[in-house]
Length: 307
Image (cartoon, rainbow, N blue to C red; front, side):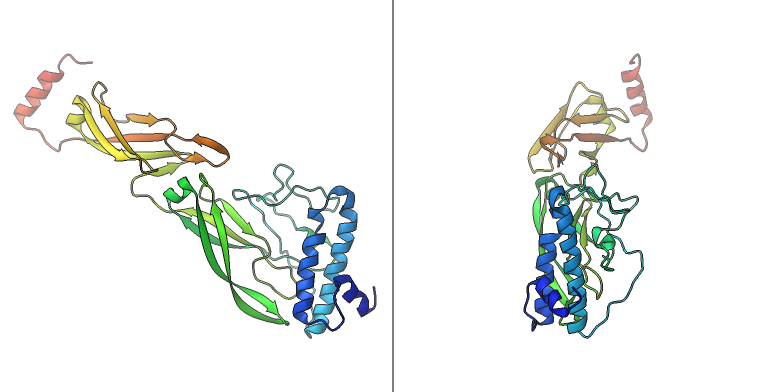
């Protein structure tokens, strides 16, 4: 593999290929031969091909583009954290520090480890992912929605770094929580001598004027006059899905700290279809600022002997 023609053969391209054609061929082949996409039986062959493809691209791209690739020993790593859709299959590896979290196939957030590209022997690394925020309303997280996102990134075209606008779509599933992460692999900035970085979008929850989310439950605070808290009250409001709800309290005394729980009227659970959390209604009793003597006497008489 010491001759340049062997590198063209590895990438399955003619000798007069342009830098862009070399780049396209490389991207296609690394997707096909990435070891994580192969069963254990064919993994050794995939690893060998993967390293050969990366080395061929490094040599040809450096030659065609008139560039050299730095021998960078920085601790660039990939962090794959949970919350969003998991597109990474769990694998086993005999290489040191190249393992995955055996629980869910993702890299543990507390102790990130180098990706396969860092251990493949090619000298190439993958930079840390770029994180961006994706804001969603509580209604969008309840019902689910589709978001179209636009972002800019650096790409290498004919050996020159240029800025490119990208458009991607994210399907937000009902029940997703803030902090859920959606990863677009290889859609981050490109740098000479590095694999393309990943882009991670982190779900953020916009503040709601009426409801507050606590885990899978929804909490709403209602202010009620003292007289109604003691003698009965009826009030109406709309649930998070827009349905009307009317509650009547006739025989119940609403006391400080009183909480009404409506089972199954909270947020949907992302991992359990058809299951929802609860709606918890907390009452804030509005006491009068002052009472006249006659009012005090009437109240004292009415409440005398009560528990």
